Length: 305
Image 1 (cartoon, helix red, strand yellow):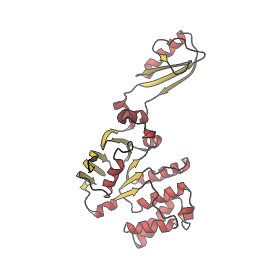
Image 2 (spheres, rainbow, N blue to C red):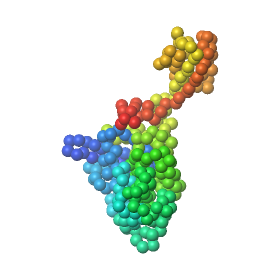
Image 3 (cartoon, rainbow, N blue to C red):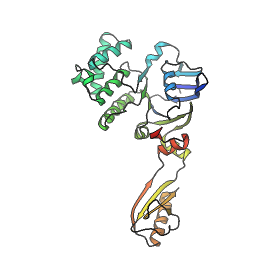
Image 4 (cartoon, helix red, strand yellow):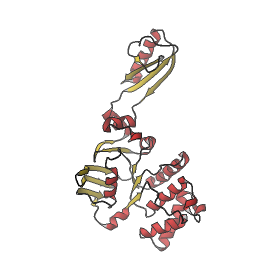
């Protein structure tokens, strides 16, 4: 199949500092790909290479199966940076018109796309207001619209929900869902665990200038940490000695265990607790998390990366 976007063995050095060391990834048509990596991993340089702001020393970038070499191809890409790239003293409509012209839109087509963007962001009634008066979430929505006004096939999103409230985050992802329904492919860089876990079809973990792991969340967990589940149990009173199959937890009334087959083994473990004379107060079974995968692969905690 032709990927919407593909990088093959990208390499880039700045003097003696090798930032990209054979970066290869694939983005399928209509896919939403989460790109995660600690600070200094090379994500920013990779994005700059994709947008033409930095030229790689070697390697290939394919857009729709063709080498990304011509300026007109770059109109198939949309970039939404983390920093707000809008003019605060201009209205929402004026911002959209300016960015539309930068992308080569003119006349009726430009007017139609501006009207679409205002409706898509839910800001038609604020079209004539300066965006400097908007809330942070509203500014993020206009920032996003400016980056996709030309209907690109691939969108690069750098922390699109940073600093916004939960309601605004939900609105932004609803907007992205609309784009995804039309077949638009998206690369999302984020440090928000829930965004990567629930909003992305597949996740790429990037470190030291290369892809160190990729797959769905379940695939990453299975390959990195295995299928075991962590069981934490609290009892009434205190535990003097851990029953069979268990170990003491961090509290006096707590027990812990690791289980590969929860449905088969958990009844045995609960029975051993009751046979030891304890009454169960609470029970929790937790699957391994993306943060644990990230920590295992990079040595960093995702939220602190």
